[in-house]
Amino acid sequence: MPDGSDIDALKAALAAAEAEAIDARAKATEAEARAAVAEAEASNAVAKVSDAEAQIASLKLMIEKLRHALFGQRSERKQRLLDQMELQLDELEASATEDELAAEQAAAGTTQVKGFTRRRRSGRKPFPEHLPRERMVVPAPPACECCGSQKLSKIGEDVTETLEVIPRQWKVIQTVREKFTCRDCEKISQPPAPFHPTPRGWAGPNLLAMILFEKYGQHQPLNRQRDRYAREGVDLSLSTLADQVGACTVALKPLHDLIAAHVLAAERLHGDDTPVPVLAGGKTDKGRAWVYVRDDRPFGGPDPPAALFRYSRNRSGDHPVEHLRSYAGILQADAFAGYNRLYEPGRSPGPVTEAACFAHARRKFYELADIAAGKRRGRHAPPISPLAMEAVKRIDALFDIERGINGETAERRLAVRREQSAPLLADLEDWMRTERAGLSRHSPVARAMDYMLKRWDGFARFLDDGRICLSNNAAERAIRPLALGRRSWLFAGSDRGGRRAAAMYTLIGTAKLNDVDPQAWLADVLARVAGTPQSRLARHLPSNWRDDRRHDQVA
Image (cartoon, rainbow, N blue to C red):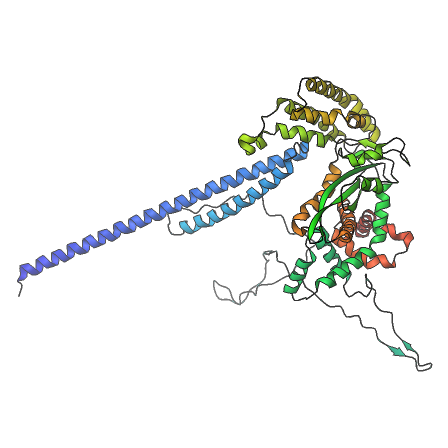
């Protein structure tokens, strides 16, 4: 049995061990706290860096957009650059928000570090006034939370708005036609059957407009639409949808013909074309889509803009000759040889006036002066050409003058051009011919110069007519959606499908040029066009339809 001294020694040892354990726990707790602080500070630092990167990207994008708005498109890559910057900004903003939430979670584990909160660069825009409001009132407390009294009196309210969306809803409209019999003559009377936009129709105009716009405006083939509708509980076969598309094309043909006549009556047209793969014999051939744009707004013309699309199986020059067989105005286009027969002096009803595109010419020089593109191509890239850079600067000076007179009358544009642009163009020609004399015919810069010098009359024609533009960008903008859509629909199913697509692109493209929602316009027109006499059909054209809607809203 241990004596008293042994017990005291054991107690002392136990106390010492407990003290060491407490000290160790304290040190561990302190270390954990320091680690939590360090983690929170690191998370804050990461969040601050992410926020700074997002701010820098946002400011860069803002600067580029302001430059674009002030000075116009300074390069062929500008829109692509803006799209890429917006994509980069999206990624940085999402990453910055993730890092902000991570910093808040890390700071929640310590009282010494405050969580980082981003300062948003712009407040959320208020929700549009036209959206319906659904008021949901939270039940009031039955008694005072402080004293328990039930004598509560309302003094105000706070409203929190939340934007929500209701998924697309399908419905079947049942039109009931009651039958009546006459007790005198025993004849049966019944109201007429409801109108449908298409023969033997079963689809309402809004559904038809959605199908058409999804296919030709949003580039969603019918098989994808069919699959999406099936997931929403509405089973529509591909043949059923295709039947409605064909019927709508026929129903809308009178409007298409009016647009075609309006386009071909223009004093000046923009023309361009792009490949359209078309299915043929189990493989795809390369068809062609052509566009002719009437846009008088640059020289203050009062007539509304419009776009006319055509389809062909190849790029033969016979097609533009056929498309423009009755046209004898100005054609702004690239140097495609297929247009040459239109410019012949003996052509009937008269020669088309050629107006060359400075944007095409500038692009050839820009490709040789694009430093960034050269870096991307690496050691295989040709050296940057000082001559090409100088040509781009000289052509840009002409475009700078054009931006200042855009929308002015043709007479005003012509006067400014003769005063300011004519000397610059003369200097450009003299400089180009002088430099070209010292270049090999195999030089890329020489080929770019020859493109302009061989067609100099076409390039200089804008000095004689204020209606002519420097570029063919109006046609390129109109045909760009079709070129982008190829990635989605891959190919046209047949030549008939190509012609049908051209007709629908004409309707949708013209609506867009007139700042009209194509789907809303198609829905309204499909509901009305069959009952509209030919003499009043022009009221359904996008520009007139838009003006009527605005008048109704004001009234």
